[in-house]
Image 1: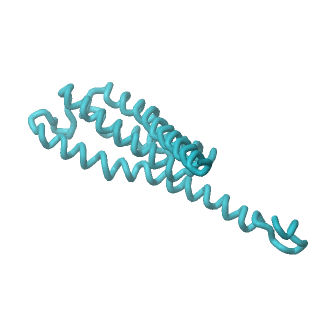
Image 2: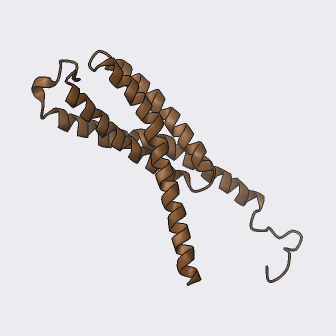
Image 3: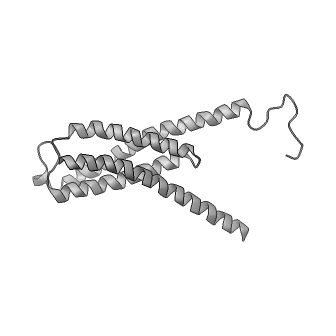
Amino acid sequence: MAGGPPKKGTPDMLSNGVKRGLGTMKWLRLLASLCAAPILYGVLCLPLLGWWLSFFPSKVNDLGGTFYLPLVVSIEVFQAAVLLLCGMTVALIGGSDRWQKVCLAAATVDMLIIGVMVQRQFWEALPVWHHWIFFLLILIMMPLGSAIIRRLRGKLVSDDAAVRLS
């Protein structure tokens, strides 16, 4: 600080209003994270799976699922890729501090709860093991997507620091 410490009665950079604003921003990030993952999954995965299953009408049962092993495995691959993107999105929204992990944990639990409710509706349409793998994919791919973003951020920051040093 060039002018010394702030005088009495003058607000400093972290006055109560600013601190409250920072806290509000964290909660908005959490709320956005909770909304972003299911919305992204719904916008990407559901149409992709509908499009993919349309290529195999004879393998799709009356409930909209399939027991044809290659098709079920391909569904798992689509779901894994989209869940990875969901984890990356949550990490981008959550910021770069420890709050990102809170956002990721909350969004993962949110996706798991929604996933359980949806899978229960289609329990008879697909093999039972598919549902359990889907739950595991949520627990694995979302944190993996977040870890990729954290790693990329660290690399970009270290690359940026190296450029500034040279």
